[in-house]
Image 1: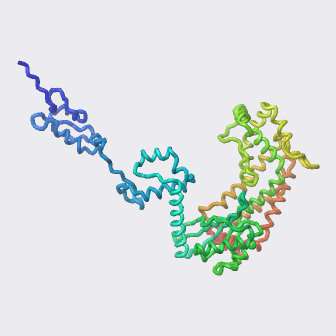
Image 2: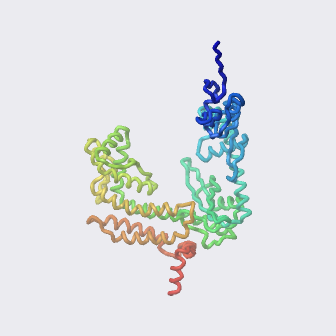
Length: 482
């Protein structure tokens, strides 16, 4: 009689039917023991004593084997604590999720209707079914509640810390002829960190100096701000009246040095005067860019011309904003790289030259014609003018910084501008430097209107430079020599 014995365990020669053997390997020199494939643990598997029971039990507790976790078993989710030092179990709190969603709308500049988008609601139904996505009306109320809470905290900070603040304000008129004013507060906290907060964006009665001054006074009372160092404004005449009103209103301010002219705005006025002289090459290049970008067909043809001309550039030509000279600089800097592409385009499109010659006003007597495609001399002027504008472009970005102190470098920056304009007033290029000399002379006249007389400049500009350790030694040496 033939007897066939089949069992699940064992290190003998029998066929192994237990699923546990998918996770263990029998030792070659000792068939009664097996090694775990995950943690290398050695367990007995002798069929007469333990069989595969010990192997199965080990799989349930093996730390390196995740196969024992049932697909229906819920897992613990962890998150970093608010102080960032601990990892704590995650807990679903409806209020916190709603607040985080409202902050996401604000931070990412999303419209309120985003909360009602079908795709987002489908995503949240899968990602977090417990979260009830609010409507746009509810989202608006949540954001207003966050704003009021943040405002109360900031107001408490101003009142309790009694920090001296520097204010920046500007006004403009909307298309509906409504005047708005923005007020920004800059301060240094107890930890020597620079703080910048936009504390108000409000509708004002008009651009008159007294109206702006009254609005400022009301806002400072509302925020509990009593100590003001400076108020930075642009060069509109109404701001002089506003500053006079605030000098009478602020009893704790050093009223003599309260008004600070915006350095970036003055640089803008200086450069705009220079651009008026350099208008002909700039206008021809601007017209050429407008022509190319007027239709997808023309733009595709221009891209082919770029390839034919072997121009290496990641970007493409862009039109500028007339009121922003720094965008004009970017336009000229970019367009100059595509000079050969424009020349190639003139050969490919017969309407290019014809249309541009009709674009623009009729030339006045004794003035260059602004019409037509860019000429060879235009590109020469642009290359030189671009280098000149680059100094002002970098300077504007520098003085417009909000995450670092800028007052200590104002004096050096103003001196650099004076030196540059003086140097360019005598600069001759390509045998025809009259246009550059005229441009620099006109810019220098505008410069001296605001910074030509040190007596008319805010003394804080000099004090900040003297207190800068990098310049303090030079100032002391200069005083000792006197």
